[in-house]
Image 1 (spheres, rainbow, N blue to C red):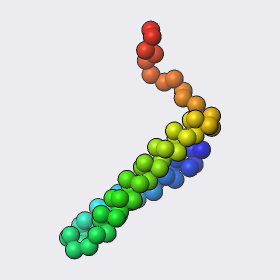
Image 2 (image 1 turned 180 degrees about the horizontal axis):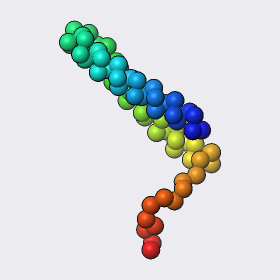
Image 3 (image 1 turned 30 degrees about the vertical axis):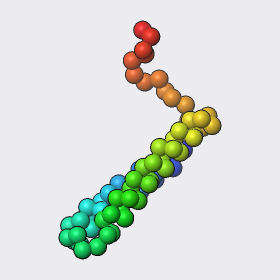
Length: 71
């Protein structure tokens, strides 16, 4: 589970980096930056939904880190 999330996070960051590169090199002449950012958004949404699904299936559990609300 940790490896899947780490790989997805690396893919999201690399997509963000490629969008920055295309923004600097293309100067608005192509849509490669837009596709990179759309890919990043899609990967981020997919990762979020996968984490929700994994929690629902019981593959991951919340750790309870933080301040309890009832105390």
